[in-house]
Length: 579
Image (cartoon, rainbow, N blue to C red; front, side, top):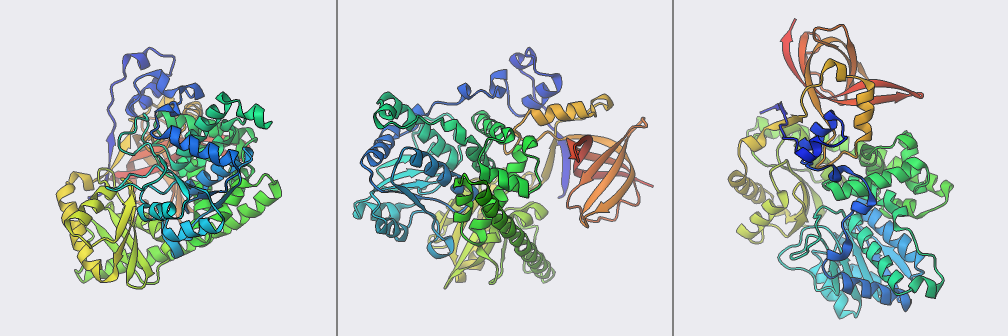
């Protein structure tokens, strides 16, 4: 149905209107649900207290006992950037407390996801007395049973949505478990671990633990740059609480005092450290850490975050950079295969990309990249998409990506309950999920998925909308406003970067880097021209004939060789008239 530009409309509440916040920011904040200036004050004092987390006392008792008695603790991580940062944060803090701690990250191609009985056995080989899961565990029912049978205590820290059955752990810290009163339900896994460590330090302080053991009391905020990376990379909603965590992490990075691994990753990506934005964590740091988990071993990413040696950090960053380049090549090849397959199936009328849900599968696809592939196809067709790869004999591993308004995990749960046995296992969030099915059930699953989606999804849901914060006056199209917007972040998931729209004359264009288009636009009824860039454009054969355009754009500051200039980051173009 195509993409169309729609302007946001929000009422500016009195506390916001009467604040010292500029008029343009009042409008932007109101469009994002902000009603009070306190919601955008980035003070650490405005963070929620950890006290309302369920089972917090039990979790702290487990940790303190293991630390005091030098019981071996094994952190069981996950293979994405949130899992890596959660693991690195836990390792850094527990090492500071002189705990006997190590970590394991399951190879997902060998062991699957989460705390499986096989992973518990690996922990037992290390004489583990306490297992702490990070960014996983809430669905590890069998693993928890096995840990109890082995006499190993288990602390689950996670943020994923629980299923019908939760693991029989000694304690579970998850703001999304039923009955939990923690105000923000959007913490990433690394955010959950950060809060647990804040509470542990407070308990130790009250007990006089630091004086007794002659250990310096740590400033947990020193690791907020790690928290920021995991939070942004995992695409959790940047509510006011997460925005504080990310903002203070960014401040540490920009100061040059942050984690040397993060700095090495930013440098190899060509990002100016002092100008780092949340988007740099999401598009530059996160993918390089994720590449290790997708193609090789996420331990490389974790070690990059654990080292304090600048040279070692540089070496790890180079490895991650090369893995990310390989990931891009594999992804491009898989995307090309998928698009050709879709075109062939569409021509044979065996699949209709106008169906609500798209499923794609090739036997030789890499399991580690199917999530990115699903995301790319979803972006192209604006449909919930699941990409499958061969997992093991007789099974397919699927990675799902959804569109706003379609909670893909809930959809899969409905399919699983309505068609028993069709899905072996599944889990995830509103916008992303994973699942395993039997190879013989692929066609049946496609049909079942679309049957459920047909009951859940309206035609309006399948219309891609580019939400705009409205038009800017010619006087507002300047670099000072762009700098103001840049500083007003962090912007991200659930608190999107400001997008404006307007009508411009197309003066000139040229292709750069084979797939990007630089554009010169002229403000209507003015001689003022503006430079813009459209990334990953496709040649729709309109450029040479277009005259008047309706453009959705971000107002950005281009920084090149120490010089700043105004630049429009083009998000969407509609042709109004031709020559």
